[in-house]
Image (tube, rainbow, N blue to C red; front, side):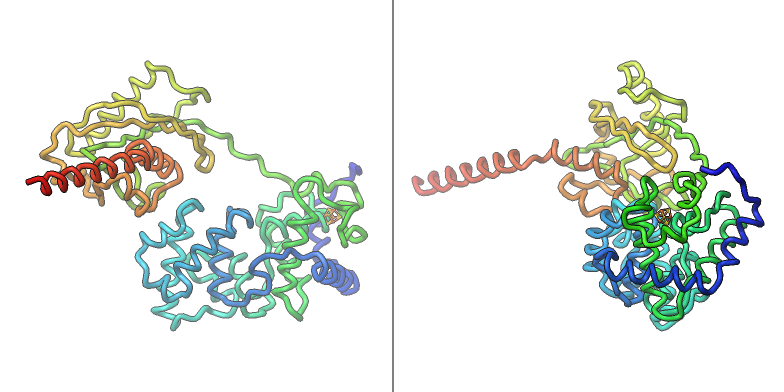
Length: 419
Ligand code: SF4
């Protein structure tokens, strides 16, 4: 590995100085590799702008394998832009449940409505026009423009960023504005005039399959070895320069499952907070002290319940009493590691359930555990809902109650025959 360092201008000139012959060779190698080894993705050669848009938004922050079943379900539910535009936001969030980063779903919905009301339901055909729509950034605009409309629009995303920086031997941070300018310029220069969409897909596939983050296949399958600067200097494991990740913070939350008979209280999370628009059990953050990974002690649980009960009564016009701790769920949200302690509580004043309203007006509902599925929930809320549903309403209980009903009606029949 070399110890020679390039200054920024030297690094930048790498991308810009690539001559026509070098670029032609690079393109040929990439196209030839793609025709033999490109990924057999379900959307390969897809040119419908609506479908390209939905999948590209889903693929942000989510892997290809995880996206496939969600994409299929979403497309069944909203096969066209018109269906998406006419849906309620709650339905869209429900179809998005489990993918996280729900602002993506809200932006999809807003954009569908905007396209229908102001663009006759048509997408702009160039990257610039696409970028003016909510939730469509430079990468997504380039992907839609090139895949759907064959526009010569460049792309830079995680896979191509890694590929470009290694090819160019770019040792500086690719996230700075100088790094970004250089990468986008390079992405634009390497694009051929013929089939740019296919070429963009080839670049992403090469980054995803060969020029991987860990152990890139430099000597076992990469068609670009002879043109790659990082390989020449043995620095492929150092490039791209990784940004220091923010430290993970631990925090505790309490969820309160309020029960009245066979119904449970859930509410819709308001705008401006995490998971806005999704349904959830009332939950309260109990400070952001660092906490151990192990379960909490009985004393800590007790304190947590007292705090949660106080917060609940400040927020809802309803008296509740502690029943038991149901479970503890550990989950991650961005840079937070959250221990969610879930309590079951019973309504004390049964008369008030029908008139209860939160102090701040907010959508809420009293639902049976068997109906939780009808409401879009965050992942941790859904886990808790499933647990409650399985505890309160197990199929064996249902079978037992049906048996009881059947034998009661038989008995009633016999009594009638006798009389
Ligand atoms: S030679 Fe290695 S580092 Fe360079 S592009 Fe190929 S796989 Fe990536």
